[in-house]
Length: 389
Figure 1: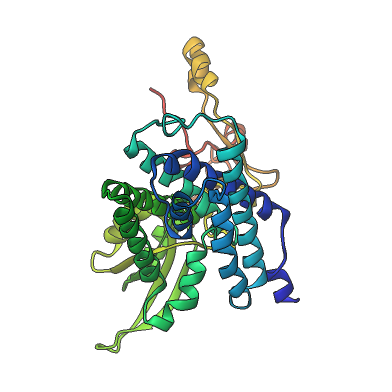
Figure 2: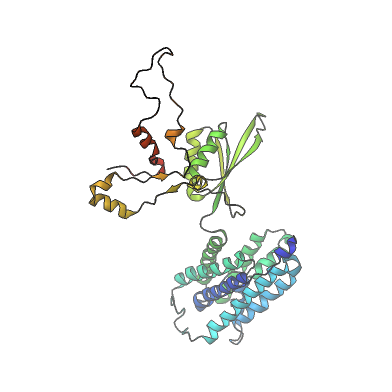
């Protein structure tokens, strides 16, 4: 299998989502931020600054193309053909719709933003949120809508900075210059707010709301802990060999991935089984591969057991018809399955061997016992049986 061919494969669905990302970003910047002179981050904010200092015929779309394209072309070899093509496509859509919104569509800009008016706080919050969603979608589908990220990858290490520090430093310089040029500090401060909201939106789109959590569990009762977690959380668990550095004692280490809503339950389960267990929990941004979550009724499917569905109308009918009050949800074993009554070992008589057999003693079960054993087995409380009120 050619891994490089699969990695560089272009998908139509990706281009559709990148198109949507470019449109969303254009709406966030041109409808909310630009009318109130608030700045987006990176080269997008730089493009807006140049747009304010140059003639009107040089629109925002022009500087978006001029500033971003050279960095992607220079970074083609390092970033890869697919990444550069996806990024240029998103920037092209972003530039196109910025031009359409500002110059073609019949929008009245006399009152500031057509949606929030002159309210800079709302413009900063929603402009940063919407543009952050667009940027996050671009990153999620394999591109980047701002060339400052490519610039950071190319030059950060050469000047002894991390990529994140480089981007933040660039934005601080951009906002400071804008404050000096426009002789106002409220604009860069609101722009910082928009930038912070946009960062959270990017994290939400890229990582998702339900971020995964991974837990390392070291316990002397690893079997009991693993069984309790598997039974209650229905999660796959990996058992690893470990050894204490100081004690040189061999230990078993459990590794399990859950979502953030299951962390409290995981801690409670581990503490109830082994209060002395060591648990370390950390964030994971993404997972891939087989699904490690098992459904509670997987064992029933494997056994071919069909469970009767409970409907709210059944409860209403039970109130109307007293005879239906004794009806319970039951689990019907498959044909040929051994019922618990049949699976019970025969009881050994405690009578002495020499005790004569009385005429009334029966060596075979009675008709009533046979009939009782052939009835469907009622579901236990754990299987969802509804108790009588």
